[in-house]
Length: 70
Image (cartoon, rainbow, N blue to C red; front, top):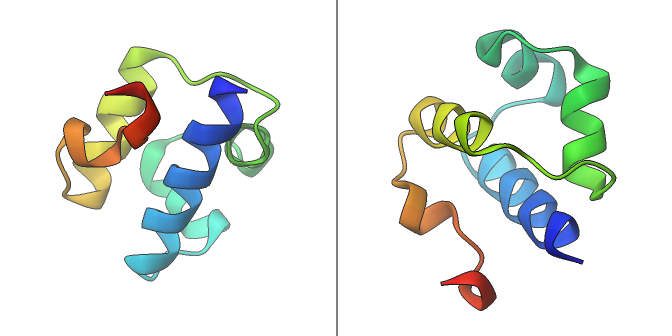
């Protein structure tokens, strides 16, 4: 459940910033399949991964965090 919430937030911010999965994965230095697993909620992102995502999207980790997890 928590993984799904993170995945939805990451996907929404990625799309808002105009990234495709391919371009965003490349910027993060990960495979598209790993990013897809996170966005679908099949993989819980690590704290380091979340920091990298927030940095790449130019948002704070607090903004990225699903409201239910604050």
